[in-house]
Length: 383
Image (tube, rainbow, N blue to C red; front, side, top):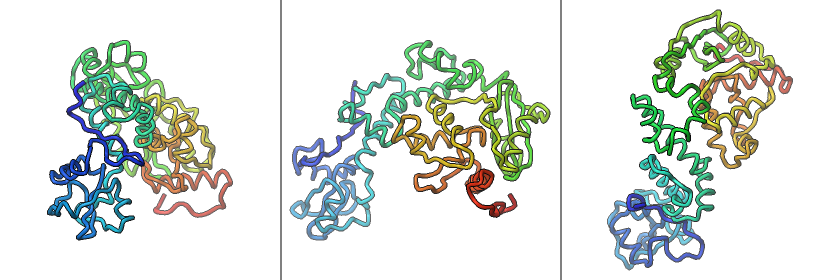
């Protein structure tokens, strides 16, 4: 493979005199003179006469070579008494590991139609396969293989929606054969491939809305189960989001069809009782990772919370806290999959798809209903 379209440097290990790609300080000085932005995460240079250190790409006027010294990291320069440049802010340079992964991700996006192996990617990154695997998961929360699969699936969906045939879309997305995708397609796409290709054409979705203690709630479902449960301030935005998700489906309001499921959810919201929402049938799209996370969320006891890191550990993916957070953010069925019960490691509440104020109220209601907190007023702002 031609690697000329990507340049990734290896992590500088203690004891190395020069960053990877440099055999001498003169080569580093050449990078400074040419303001090579790609080397901003490789080293910094300091100027003795001014007491300031900069990135290689700093736009400031270049000093005399005799006044320049080099350091592997900004911290090293500061330990030697140099101050960060106010123009290029070298103290905020992207960490080396993050920069390696960022460039590798960009390369994989540009070459989504190719087969990416860990060995091949490690050669491009200049790291050993095991080191790359650890570094990639540390930065992104997922493995290079999972990232590559996600890119291919995104390409596949885009190609199908644009009108290309299923066969053409599968091969253009980098899948080696039709059989390599079809066994997983229903789990990943949530419906038959031909149905997804037509934007859900032929799919019947019924929905119903109701007022609740958190504003307005919508429940939508197919003949197999709930496909959406969302919270908001009015019906129109909720319906618009549903139509955007299923643009060619036949969507109709049907209070009678959805009354049983919706009443169960509204009853839970209004009195905070420990309803068994996890038993409601679902018909949603999910990846295997989302499936593992969402099933774990449904195991969190009523009135309690768990951190993103704890969920990652429970699914045997330590270090994947950010990936867990993304799975929570993409949850299409509020409350049934209780993503509101997941908090930061310090116990703080982070963003919630349907409003952070709703997350706060939900947690307070559940804790009170379970007897874990005293009775306090939690109906601020009219909710």
